[in-house]
Image 1 (cartoon, rainbow, N blue to C red):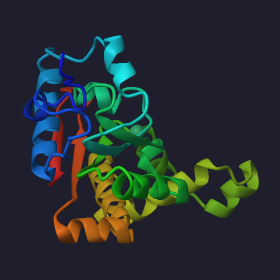
Image 2: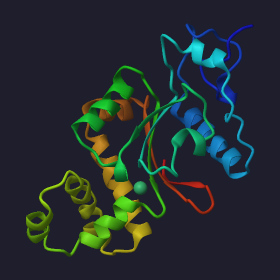
Image 3: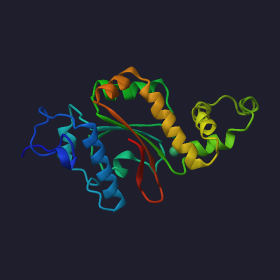
Image 4: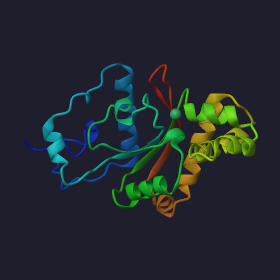
Length: 221
Ligand SMILES: [Zn+2]
């Protein structure tokens, strides 16, 4: 049987061997994610069962067609909410999709080595990291650090404070969306990302996930 396991995306499976595989365009990759989310919302996901042959097919290579940078929240697993399969997505997850050198390096790897055509920065409703940033925004940081010590969580909160400042509000949804925008902007400063965007080989989309409805709403694409 000819493998159709280089990607599970309906638009680009079937005829090619893994060796001949070409990355989909950013547009096609985005379309596939949107269709996957529609299936998830409609409770008609097709990737909840994984055949061993797919795992074996990807023993020595990977060909993810999209990267997702999202929160570590257990309710926001990218593969499930986009109804994708093993080998489809290159995912980076940190609380509040906080950025640091390792996260940026991982994204660079996705762009430069894996040639992934699409990166989605995905925030979500009821994000604990966003809520904590809102809660602590007006606190005196020095007093807090004196009291609790400088924890690693502090750097996550500090990454979200500019979003509160920019949107001039402590409304969680607004802060979350501003934080998505900020994160996307910072990722775009990576030279490899910038050149991918310039040549049209890479696209960055910003999105927000609703826990209530399961819908991924694209804020910018
Ligand atoms: Zn979160």
